[in-house]
Amino acid sequence: MLRQKHTLYCFSPDVMLVTLVVEIILALYTFLRYRMTHFGVVVSAILLLLAVFQIAEYQICGGDNPVLWARIGMIAITLLPILGLHLIMLVNGTERFLKAIYLVTIASIIFFFFSPTAISDAMCGGNYVIFESTHPLYQFYALYYFGLLFVGIWKIYEQVASREHNTRKRSVLLWILAGYLSFMLPTAIVYGFYESTIVGIPSIMCGFAVIFALMLALRAAPIYHEAE
Image (cartoon, rainbow, N blue to C red; front, side, top):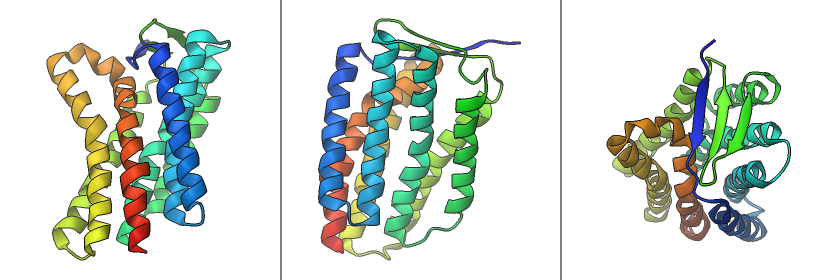
């Protein structure tokens, strides 16, 4: 069977640790301030999951049981696209098809945790982590992951173009959009220059996701709650 290698260029372990601290602080701040609202809880969950992925990579580089931590990391980032879409739909005032998409997410989590070949090995390369898999379903997983990101962007475009929201809620959507682009555009640029980095796309994205975390916690969440 064909072996696939998923190389994550997520900077050095020291940078992983700094990013982890920033994301945990943002998660605690957001939860303590906005925990009484649905929007605040979802933002806090996104920030916490970003931190969990950093913990997973750090443990792969310096801890024991790398395959287990690789599975934990993949589960964490599997939840991120659906939670991002959940945020957008909260602002839009609709949750159409959201439950059905969560079922796909749950199936992906079960796959990563229980399938023996979902993650066959993980190792630290010093400046990145290598995830190894022998399972052909990764192509479908990529479709799920990037598909949800682009659906979220489309939903933002629809609402902003329609001008149905007040100015503050439109600002929330635009900050979420900026957050998406903060990690998607750099990834696309790197891939455009170096096609070989396709094996490292998940980690290239995670390296820039701290910008998304800052935008959610310090801009989108405060503006959303001012609009309530």
